[in-house]
Image (cartoon, rainbow, N blue to C red; front, top):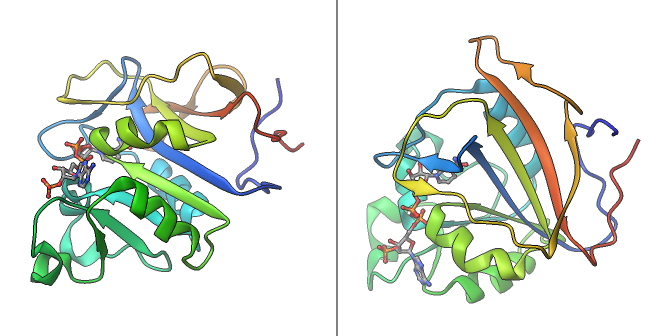
Length: 192
Ligand SMILES: NC(=O)c1ccc[n+]([C@@H]2O[C@H](COP(=O)([O-])OP(=O)(O)OC[C@H]3O[C@@H](n4cnc5c(N)ncnc54)[C@H](OP(=O)(O)O)[C@@H]3O)[C@@H](O)[C@H]2O)c1
């Protein structure tokens, strides 16, 4: 198995999902993430920078004020709350009231040849059918939480991991690996 590169030179429009999960698929707890993994934040930035990101209102609110909007990315946030777009809380976000609209808006935003759905659980659940790539960091922990990653069905194929076997070890001791999944028909080859 080949190691994944730091960036992915995709040759076709990508609507990707990116998340970090525990061994059992937990992605969130109490409105946040129940781990601290700086290397994964750096990886997330490397993958998403320059491309639109689509998220649910709860994920947006999980970012500290000073980290939102995520810089150099159009931040598209979905909510059903009428009038939320006009509140200070929404400052810096493009606010829409449906995930389908959000995905279309994203593809017309700067860097929209690659769109990244960044969560959380509700939004992954509703968008995975429209996505063709999933970049999943698996953290070697069984910590519990209240939000789960989507289950990737048989239409998704495993395309590689870094490290190819075993785990990276964070400078804080946390073990993790990054895995790549794509839908069967996606013309994607993990580059050398
Ligand atoms: N580990 C990771 O990689 C990762 C990534 C992202 C998030 N997370 C974690 O996941 C948790 C948040 O996930 P979550 O599932 O609770 O919430 P979420 O998906 O971030 O946001 C849910 C909100 O999105 C809006 N929404 C959902 N479906 C919609 C639709 N069809 N049309 C319009 N608006 C819609 C609603 O907002 P309104 O209530 O305003 O109507 C809903 O409450 C947090 O713990 C966060 O830290 C983890």
